Image 1: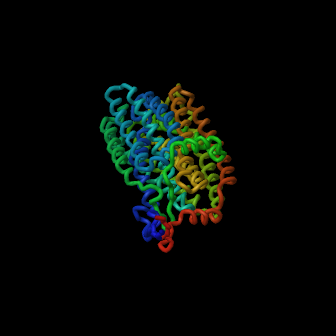
Image 2: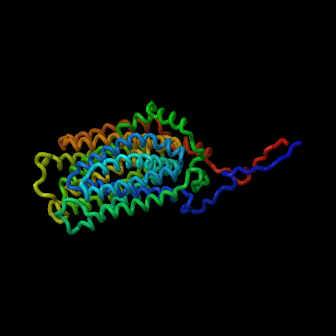
Image 3: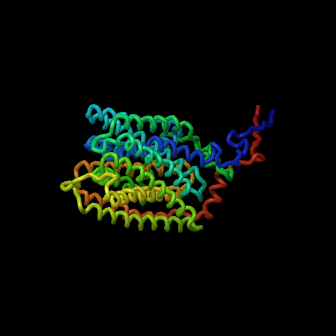
Length: 470
């Protein structure tokens, strides 16, 4: 005997309301939330690093910690996409965020005890956590937004994230304002950073998985079933022979390589302690402006997505050439052997020129990285693929950073550091143009397919009839 039983797919019961873009399950809210998580954790870490030497007079401990950090980050950045596909956003983000708190605590310990072992171990653990966090962030930022508005959402994320650097820059500036002759920041500075990072860890539990996020047109971001270890291991290995990823390698390597030079050999060498904190407010504030500007170009400048990509890369290339040229002019008067005789204070008349250069470095950083993320986001639309692509990008980026911090530790001539940084970014531009030319399709060729695949079934198609034999 047989019977007909009506069964409803749990994921297809109704088409969720899309009347408000401020819905909790909307891409706008979810990208904003991941921005707030990064505001509290890597945003505050950036402010801490941006002071040069983590706020210490001798950068050796933090240089060694950063080498350990970016070495483990290289491995777990690449593996992070696979781990995210297995664990989902909650566990991946929470594990990653907690390591930022530990790192800030290690610097508080170093401020009192001057033993760098704990700082280096905390740096290595932070590399693991950062790999998890950034792979998760990359998947969310590139797969949750609508295909034709990825540049806008990337700039939104980048602005919120870098507000962490702005607020984080104010912490040492305010707490050390009357200590303009001090060499290292006080304990309260590190405690303030730890409070923000702890808040970010708790906030990570507010992030929804991709199959619960619905765009304004009713399409789901992606309908994934979490993967297995064996599948993710195989897919991660394939990235090393993926020609698209190989074309991104120079840009990824360059994108954090310049931090050690800019933080330790521009901000820390040229400016006194309180002014370094103030400079960071504007360095990360410039990143907000840069991400908004390049996001507009990449989403709205032309109807053709490929043309927007070409124009965006060209704008960043021209601006980058001008800024690094200004950096060369600034670098020529001083070196490791002949440092500036006096550190600049923000009240000095000669403060403006070096300050504008440092501000411009922040502007270029955001434009460069937002451009690369946009290209990655244009290569696919599903969360699983983009989490792997983003993880690969962060892994290679971290390998470059690990090398860069040791370059600074070994006192490589400052002019040589600048030339290498300038050359790495310059090499990446034509390769990104080639990638856009070969792999990025115009919106009207892909969006219909993406919408068709991701659309939440309407209510009149929900009900499935299944014959069950007894």
